[in-house]
Amino acid sequence: MATKQKFVTPVGESTYSPWVIVPSKWDNKARDGQGGSVKGELNDTDAKFNIALSFSVDAFSKSDFKKSIDNLWDAHKKAHDGKYDVERPPYIEKDGNIIVKARKNAAYKKGSDIIVFKQPYVIDCEGNDKLEYFTNSNTYPGAGCTARIEVTCYIPDPVKNPQTKEMILKMEFDLVGVQFSDAKEQSLTGGGNLGSIEGVPIMAGMAETDDIPF
Image 1 (cartoon, rainbow, N blue to C red):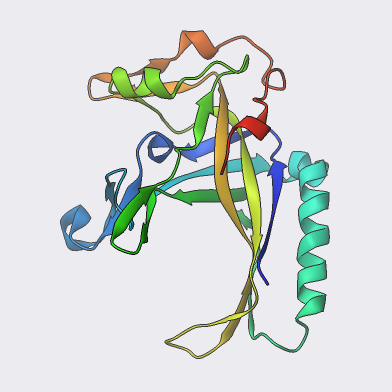
Image 2: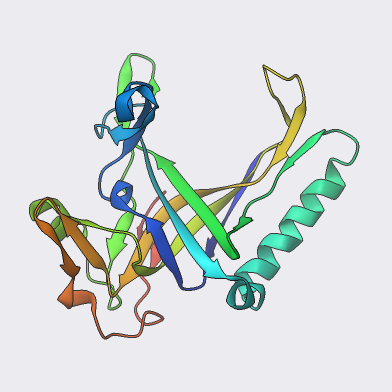
């Protein structure tokens, strides 16, 4: 039985974050046939909002987020001991940093209807909505933004890889919202700092999520 729980990450740095404003999907023809992410539509069931944050190993290891996630992961592995071949942990270490990824489907199909999910919220340090700003100004938060994310923790039973037939045990994060500080704003004409987000402690003003349905 799959379960979900909510968590807020410590403050990290975005590795790439335009797809929190609009969803993306994989296209094999992108990047001259190498494949890559391209812009999707809000009603596209193949499109997803996503973001990745990078943390120093030292800062991440001291966080309550890591302690909670590690406890859940350890319990998950123990509960399915002997029933899986490959582990897919909830975060990875890369180039000396810890990377946490989260995503959310843009829409899903129910019968003949397409149901559009509510977008992940995008706020500044005081809880002000910034999604409309980015959308209307045709800009997006780029790499290197200071941010934290709210996620739900998804812990499914082991699943079989259809190619290798191996049973995979995984734990994933679904994106609920993002809070930016010192956002590096990107556009077709260049980039810069988003002044309205600068200078306010990021730990202030996280939105009350009871009013933000997943």
